[in-house]
Image (cartoon, rainbow, N blue to C red; front, side, top):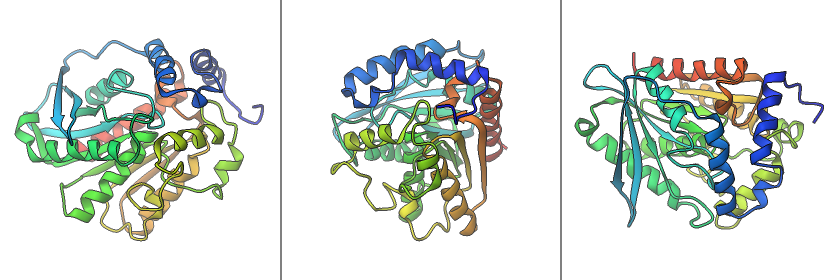
Length: 314
């Protein structure tokens, strides 16, 4: 991995992660991956910021009550809202894995954050998880008074697989004529790019996510082992991106899915959508977890919070 020019802080983060989640983890069972991922997440957890109200609840789904966690900072009675979908290759992650991330976004951006514990592979395959997420979007938008939010300032966002889900939900809302989605907050997402994009070759063995890992996650989640060629499952397959919500799109330099974000942002801009693209120099996939141990990652996380504030709180 000599071609990846990581600074000492980022290299130390990668090394610590590999102690929990080694290079063969994507080839293990979903249960074993989750056990390792839970331990990894606890290693980087931080206490909640002061002044947050945090509530666990559920939203009725399709034969399943979908767990959610609501983070509400001190502020006006009807504030903006980010519905957050965690990453983890559609296989790992839950409300606890991203608890400190979502709490800090709520606190620093001044918005209500609603985190979603959607169902994952291999127990289910697409589109079950997507449908869980859509049920939450409809429930939150349909009852803003319950959540104390402004229905005109509801955004969707997440990291990695969560960014992928968010982009599909934004398109679905546009195509159905609602609910209104005010913003997309997308961190190092996979949007359906094929192997022809340069990053899939340049970063094929990148730390913490390789192209081999991606292939294994696809085998878990997609019914036939590959991402379907439709715009909900693969946002880059869409022919028309007009009318999609404004977007903050963030990628890591050393990440095989980097150019998914670059291409998604390029096509949004070409369609007249307000978009901010940032490719974070010297960072790897999952860098948000490094925000307290890496100055570069901390700066990148600040940009996430600032964009969320700008698009949903101001």
